[in-house]
Length: 91
Length: 368
Image 1 (cartoon, rainbow over the protein chains, first blue to last red):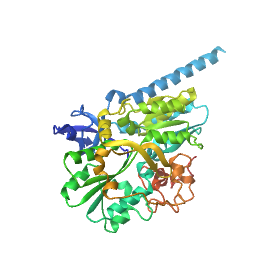
Image 2 (cartoon, rainbow over the protein chains, first blue to last red):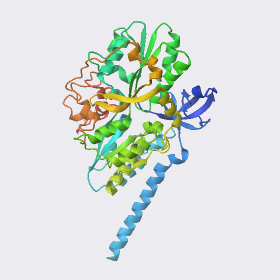
Image 3 (cartoon, chains in turn orange, brown):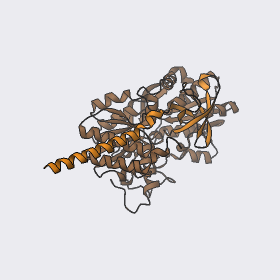
Image 4 (tube, each protein chain N blue to C red):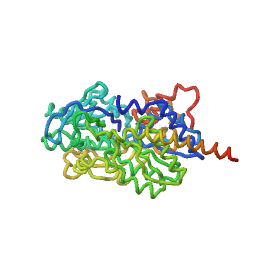
């Protein structure tokens, strides 16, 4: 029920702030979405949509953090392995 | 699709699983709150990627599952009235009430319609001015902005033949109920990302502190869930209990203030009964007195009545993470999605339906 899907705003119509509507493209399927709760949203922004309402805009910079964090952890693990083997060699 | 496919990347998922294995030194039990997360976990086999020491238990975040039987009976009673249209999300139709479900009411001639959004009901109400149109408003905080807007817009537009049957529940009181239960096994939570998109996560901070339990706001794709588990395990291993946000591309700490403003215009917090769990104080929304005209229970003069659940169904224990679906003696035999004993076998977010759809064919029983 709390399923919400990301899509890109194709166009925006209406100036009533409560009923500001957008056409949103979900991987080829275009649906009408109410933008009442994302007054800052503009064309080409990505929004997360639940039962016909955009709940938030998607933060492009934050979206990449999931992979940055993974990369940092990978590097950390490598570093730890190097340290471990270096200390074994010293012994 | 952008913002979906990259979070289903198999390599990234495996790397996260390895990273979790590297930091895990002892057994931990983590609950994912949302039924959407449960389905992703079971469908993609995320629990099977994790080290043996990590147990994921499935939480109560399935609004269809926690809607009490007596409200389903009320919806059926409304649907049976003349000149009435009952609108609902599709998931509710097969959920068993005391005697029957909404689908059999529909088969018996009641006008029961599935809608995609609660605001669709306003058009139905305008097109059918001589009939009453009722929306069965179930949901967690995620759905509240849409339901609030339907009521608010109905008043603005003078649509008098519309009302809602409210069954709105809130996540934080349910988490506290789980943590204070004597049989609780949960040591950390993956909080429901889309609930927090609306509410933010400041209300989780006192819970994390009071119960010394880490809470990680988490998304719904496999890589999201694995990162959420990693952050949670790292906190547990380090003895920390904080609120962290894995799903920052969608969730901000303050949530969505515009959405909350309209929720509180229309709804106020009150007690709610949860199916299989019982009444929890301050755990749901009800309409504010100023919007009482839109309350279907009031409009149709419905009062509390005795409702009966199947005595065999262990949904309450499944929803609290005490039992897994395949530990139920009726699972897959006397209880199936076609002939369900309880709601978790019906809903697209129910834990029992997830196990039935994705695990039943497996030769080995699911790892506990």
